[in-house]
Image 1 (cartoon, rainbow, N blue to C red):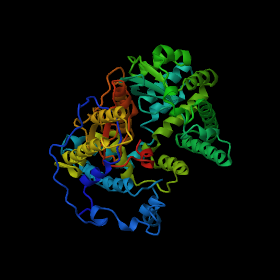
Image 2: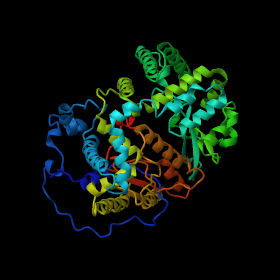
Image 3: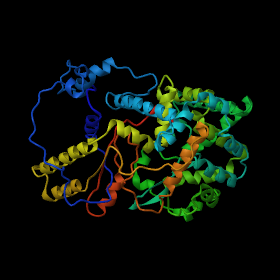
Image 4: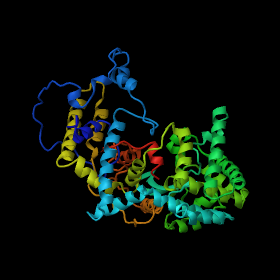
Length: 527
């Protein structure tokens, strides 16, 4: 018997709250279906409630260093697994347990895809990922059409058309596109164009002048060369192409906003719409881009970094065809490496390990579980919920959360430091909270074909996901949409959901409680 049930895990995770908006505003704080009975005091050890006394460091006074007191024993005894860049006592351990549950579900679905409609999707997707021999035999075939198009790029219009072709598959050279709420009208969705197109994690990796950064950039250049050689380039050609790629990416990095600048929401809001894009980058064929993307109807557009897009326009005038050919081929291979034969996967991980510190590539099944969760998350979640969160579990957690809200409301009335106006607003905020617990009331559909190679399946999933995302532009915000899959142990806060309700006189929050940690290094191997 497990020390703590899945229900209890979700209940504990419910304390790690993240707020987002609600489409409805209840007039009073929600209350549980029934008033709970008077609590019964029960004496229990840490082990009785799923914790471990060995995790404590009793040599430390908790009043001096509570973290060391609570976790010091666990830190001293625990090593980060070789295939992870980080490890925590709570989320990571739950993630690992749930990962095994998902594997069992997917193994059964792969063996019997005819069992039901869910298995018919998740089973073949997972099975294709696990078929390493088939992936080896396919080689570059799944991405060869994209590579061939990259080799033919010559003009600025060619750049725009191929950019759209790659963006459709969530391969993001130059910039990326997504749908999000309008900062100044958070009730509706608009398109966002954001800086992107770098192979290293951040602009500073290109611009820092310390010796370690210089060494890492040299290693990155060698990595590009090796990957392009694997993709069919001759060694000399690959070396020259790597230099071209570094030059373009460095220029983009110089025009990119810093992490600090990207924390300024005012600076990130530059609503130029379709008509304003040519003023930023006139040499980029914007109309051709949106047509090729399949969303020529998009008109409402925000640009997060105008100077970055001006730089794109400048590069289109300065960089010749061979430079763009190298740049696009690199980004195609870079974005699809985890989907390709073993040589690509291993070279990709060899460089990733220098960035993350992970010493070993996660086992194949772990990468395939993560990939299936990413591509078909709310399908995979359905058997997971049945197995780990059944019956009245959701109702029980909702009751607990509502009771926390009720008690908190009473505490507000007893705060002597809060004036009446502030107290009133606090009650309004509490009353407007909505709760998304465990899993959504309505599951997402995944209307794309599965049955090709693993890489083809993933690219189909990416294309479907982006198309669904961009179809939201111009429409009202769906405040019941989940932005993580239900098997994810995590929570999140969406400030724009607060903003919209604040315009109506109160704040609105969405409460998320999930059942699995978000991936760090594993995510890199899923897509």
